[in-house]
Image (cartoon, rainbow, N blue to C red):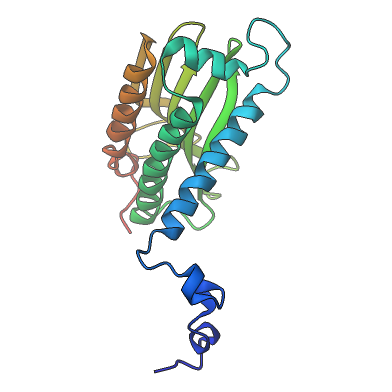
Length: 221
């Protein structure tokens, strides 16, 4: 039956651009393949973005990130960026679930970012997921709960850092004003394959810390 409330349903050939014999998608794989192509293009654009502003030298004409990836391992830059993006997706899903599971407050918010910067001149990719906690009755400043995982490409290897840190402007649970570290890990001098594996392991460990908001005294929704 045609659902008149859905205009697309009135033209069943619109999905194949009115050329069902030539443009059909019988196996349903068109859009997954298209998404893969878009993701690879996005990774390539990300690599180019990281290379902007790098002065010519021994890395020219490649970007400094590409040089670092080549020095650390054999994986192409697009593969590395897609691996990082997948871990970003997992941590992103965790952050959303966590935000919905606890009462952070009406004006509180969660920020999920994949940051691109440099650490001591070395390219760095950081998954930064921050809970901004607002309670105007207790403070004019906001508190933060940050989940971070960073992958830094040095000249010949990689470094992975991960942390869960609360920056509190008022007493929350048993924790007073100040900085409180719930988790921290640091791994250095890693070949690329090992770094990506540890990066994924650290993301999994952060995703297992969904009880931290409760330890800060936030009630479950």
